[in-house]
Image (cartoon, rainbow, N blue to C red; front, side):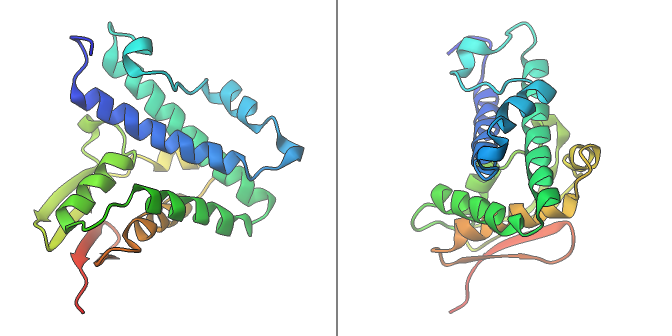
Length: 201
């Protein structure tokens, strides 16, 4: 590990990689007619990095490099989803399935609410740590409550002519897939407040 890089940098980069993996699956829905969709996204927003972080990051501007790649991943997700939905709104079901299955792939056995929240936080891209997108209100093994402090995604969706509500529906699909085989449930108590709790049986 570079002496300039810390765990938080790898943490952010891993979340970028997860989101980019989702984008690649979404691009797979375009079909042969739009086989150059990936190249189009790269021309608009830049080429997404997949090499080990220490091999590619600009160590003279670590924060700026990560911010650029967070922005790139956000634009590509918003653009790829919005483009598909403009072609056919029924594509939402296929996109939703990608998110749901990604959640299932991230899941672990015997998760407590606290562990589940940590994995979700480690997986969903919510800007840079300094953005403080979410605030943790209460956390224990039985339940976790957190609140969206600020939405770091809206601008990207607006700029590509998309609907931020689509993003949050897909995000919820990922969480539902993540919790599907657990004894935990996810719910929203209001627009910004989220709960994961052990299911009462």
